[in-house]
Image 1 (cartoon, rainbow, N blue to C red):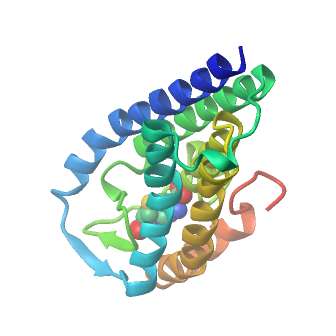
Image 2 (image 1 turned 180 degrees about the horizontal axis):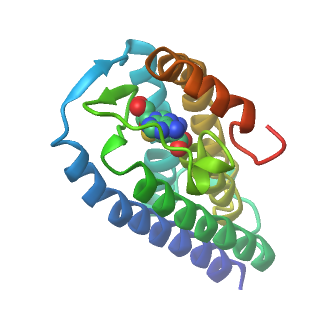
Length: 197
Ligand code: SAH
């Protein structure tokens, strides 16, 4: 029984990662055609991206494929799989909306593109970093879907490293480029969670 509950959680996680890739791919192709005019990528930024990739894709991927590290397994519960699936579904919905709103302004890293537009509508009216909100929800979902202390919690660690290494720099870059317009936008919005943070 619990083996099949654990498997259901893993299958849900794999489906979530597939959905993530399907949503991102067309935007990645389109954005790549727009010229970058400001590039703030740094070694720290690359480290954050690698940490997020390791925690949210590589470690859980190895776990789902091989069962490693078995010693960190715990008993899977149906309620946890349901909570995890709801987090993932919400994350994918927000992820898709942020891509639609950002459109050609999207970058995987800290970059400003030619004719960059400041977006403050849709999910961007509620928080300044809704795409990172969707990553956070994914990481929470992963913790509920994978009944393994290491593979499950690695996503939250990877997300936190990327987010906290990046967010100040990203906001500073936006302030430099958009000045008082971004300052006003900051006054009206929180970072990740509406009305809270
Ligand atoms: N932090 C945002 C965007 C992530 S993509 C979010 O979580 O939704 C990262 C790139 O998006 C940054 O390099 C920056 O160029 C761009 N960006 C961030 N906020 C933006 C905004 N409000 N409008 C337009 N572009 C933005």
